[in-house]
Image (cartoon, rainbow, N blue to C red; front, side, top):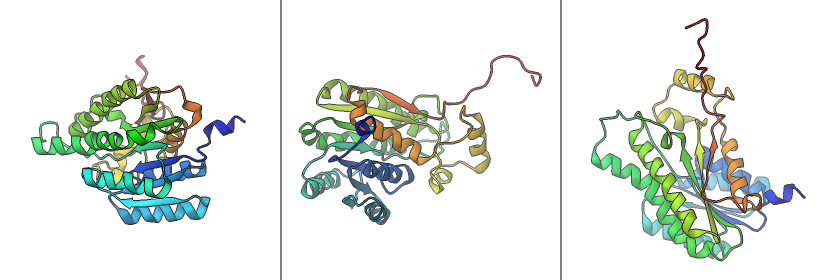
Length: 263
């Protein structure tokens, strides 16, 4: 009985960035919980490969689409294709996001704006398109991938940090206006092992080891750690949860403020 409240049986869930590590793991976990998942990604081949893998493993119907989330016409196509295939939308996971190392004073207006469009505005636009359909479903929700860089000083990732900070407050506003029909929440994600994507963002192995050693849990996150949090926030178990930032970050970093023999 307790496990049933985490079931997503008969849910239809759109997941953006589903060709990547976190998005792909989220699609897997939600399908395992009973959902029909729509995998959207700029890399259409990666989305299709993951969709085929999920269908083979779970028997669940899937739909994969190549989508540039910064193109509003393609977002509409994503919504239309989902409705044509499954007839409804129960939940949306706005997972797309990207940020790389940039010197604090080395960003121009164009770069800053493009980061905001990708990381914040795109999820606003897709949520707006989905909202009329979400309102028709019980326990409908929209969940967003936030980041610890959006809630802590992060001068090394200034444009990405700014965009993710804006995302947090945007979701709070959505939650305030969408309840009780549609719940809106953010997962504030710590350092997760995204494979090559992490290295592409400007990290090296030494940096990643320092991060892992600093965490309370003494490891970086796995994509499935985040996916299980999405499962919770979408499920009936979270039916009274909206407008929150759920931190999934291995306990964050901790250093004693007391003097030690090394000081």
